[in-house]
Image (cartoon, rainbow over the protein chains, first blue to last red):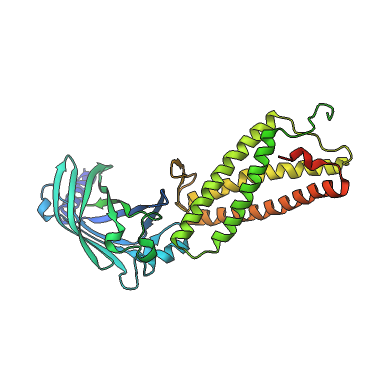
Length: 182
Length: 178
């Protein structure tokens, strides 16, 4: 009996804890991208980023996403490609070490399907961005994921001789996934 | 054995031999040139062409192996002693092994580097392994080492052919004349 009592106390504590921590922290996440080089796919990802997410399907106006990506943490095919993309023709991380996304509006578009509007800032260029988001509920946790396409030339990423899109395509597909820890 | 073997290679075998010789020499030369380039759109282009050529050679070597296994090649001259004949057989087998392994390690290197290949912008070639930088370096080193081994073997192959032609004067090269 005593142990059941402790269990109930413990459960109610955890319930209190859960209901108080409204803003989720991100348990784990992944920001990957796929570019196209001479018609072939090239994969990469960012090792370091921070994600401040709060998602409440019952209260979308107060839900938000603030993502900051450390561009220097890029993981690409080779060190040579990484050095190049950190350089001034691509990300120019000396002047612009981070990319930011700040949501402004989240709308539901279907069952567990949302669209996140916000401002994306990369290499000193700020543009509105529309990101699809799918919530999935599995193993008692929640994860948010989605895929969208950016045009690198809109942000001056890959300028000079690289701006031609016959070798490296303009479109870059971004895949993200965040596990939300209540 | 030799009484049943043909005097000349089949036209298909001769064609494949010379097409692959030209292709391998080109791929080797381009490979040497491109790896020293600074990263640029030109470098990405030439890497892609090198890979397309590699895929072609990988395809051709399998055709060649299939042809070889169903069409008996002419026998080695009986003037060659047993040991030399054995050595020649080992060298020829090694050439085939390298012609398979070199494009394969190139393919693995590209896969591990996270760069897929779309053959002539038409046929997507699947990645063999997931993106892994350490693995990519390993396959790159292997690809290069195997290429230098191939170069050494090909030089020996050419030297042996010239020896037959100009020292032994046994007309061996005529068997492979296009």
